[in-house]
Image 1: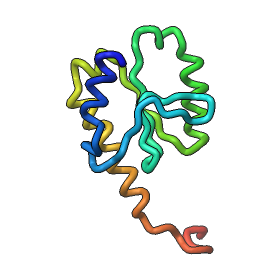
Image 2: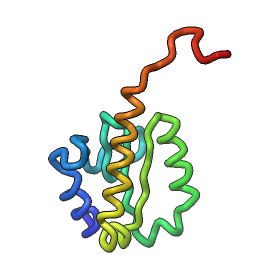
Image 3: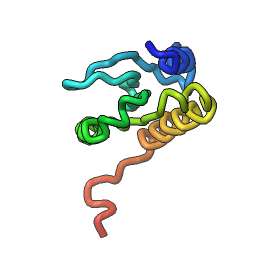
Image 4: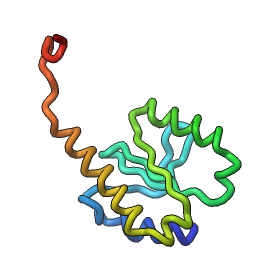
Length: 114
């Protein structure tokens, strides 16, 4: 793990963020997510400088993951190291918003079509 990944794992593990259980290096299809919460269908990627050269690949990958219903948050390694609190706030909001969406009542058949 990079220093940024180790820091993020320390902050995510043991359900430390809104009770969400994250896994490290979790496979989804042919891809491996740095961190993934199955329950919330939320992936988190930490990118180093080499990702500046793989923008098209990352876009295809993120598009495929979104097609599977997975939200992907991306942060730069240096962002995680320098602005950990801000990064954690974004992750927290994504987890909590996911909870709110799960609890929202779904329209019954025929409702909302008028």
